[in-house]
Image (cartoon, rainbow, N blue to C red; front, side, top):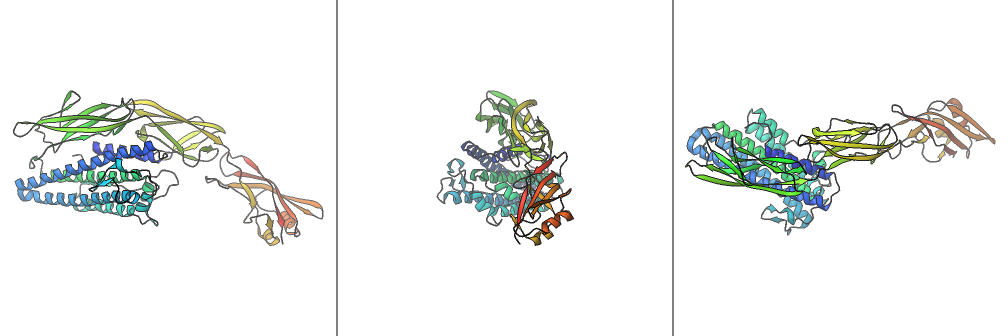
Length: 524
């Protein structure tokens, strides 16, 4: 066992999780809900297979105690308590999934039978409220917070009581059960619970919880294998053999290909085995054989076969396997983080991702300006060069071949003008007392999502007194003494005009803006 490295099965689950997360960024259509249901079925099957596999592994420890005596007892006992803790956490997550469905559909829902969930029978798959109600709660007191705590307690228990000083396995478990929040945008500060379940469709919330079950069971598999090796590879004899399959490419792009592994659980090097599928036979080495499959047909596909081997008595035995995968069309997702246009002179955050393709294999180009990575996965900053249109083109490496994934066009606009006003004075009337204390003219952005400020460069004050228009100028954002004298000397009912207001944004290469005039009536 290579402690700390992801298994092919785990890579498959992570790929499915990436696809699911990308889907959450889109509008919830019937097709997407359907896709979530398919992913949930695959995850649920993986939970069952991995749980059974871990049960079988526990039987090996009982056999080791029967044959090796006391030197296997310590590891058998640690394996048993690991199995108990894992099952307790897995069952807790299962209860959460059932509670979500029953909250949405009632206790008599056909989607829950004998503790199992049947995704195809869920009628309110697209319900966006039940995850918030059950998992988040009104004041961050939902059950997702308890789940987070229980997973961390489980992780700490394994670290402190089971795996000892094995840094590789500890690193693997910490990475797999890492509940820190993957930031989706530069201003996103939500906790893991809110980020994961807020306004999440019912079926995707269930799939996310199933993934947690799979992750917990995979941690247990690594721990049990570690405990088995502590007994000694020559001491433990195989008491049961099962065929297993790892399909890391649960979804592949049309026109591409994938590869899966089939192997014997608890394989012994002395066993000679072969994998049979599609009329072909592949010798197994180290208990493993790679099964190629193609992405020709869009939609669900399946590969079935068997593994044959000779047991200790020399008799040939056969174990069947089957795995499913989905072929999807290449798709490109480019979504402005703040709005559907880009603005000159400000940082425009965007998320760029291609379903089924790692971020490192994506190449991005822009026709009007620059696009720069922020250091957060999939998050970039766009800085347009001129007003007009901006095209973002994306290509990706798929099976060692660079493929064009598409181009998106966006409008580039000038940042809107700020609104001028006297500092801390609202409305259209002003008292002489206010005029004596006000410092100058400010320019404020209204209803603009970007952090951008303007500074007033100059302005004039005009006051009508005795039938004459008197004016004074300022070459800053502050009132001059002459301007203050004009304003404080104005009588009740007089009009004060602020004109020729010029302002400039606090950014490089910003242009000078001529702002609208403002006027006030002296009220007292």
